[in-house]
Length: 103
Image 1 (cartoon, one colour):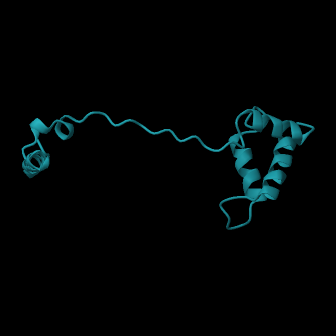
Image 2 (image 1 turned 60 degrees about the horizontal axis):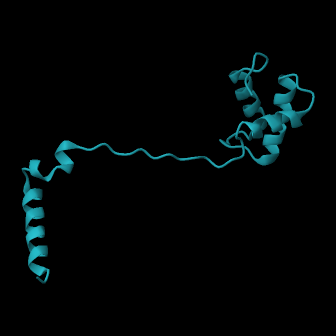
Image 3 (image 1 turned 180 degrees about the vertical axis):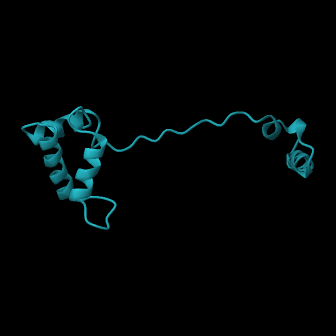
């Protein structure tokens, strides 16, 4: 939406113009009013062109969440480096599991 005719500040002003006084979000009707205002500011004759552009850029799609993979931690993942009671407890758990398994 931002171009040489319409800056980020212009978008903020239009958002503030169409939203309710204490609201942080806008409704669909307010969004359509904002699209009309943006089209005027961008010198587009038809707000439908702006809507088509927004949809072509991925607007209207649900957000895509990407998770990160945790790196291997030397002191957390390597049981040989444990020096605390956790190591003792894990060794006892291994022994008890081995004792419970039938041969």
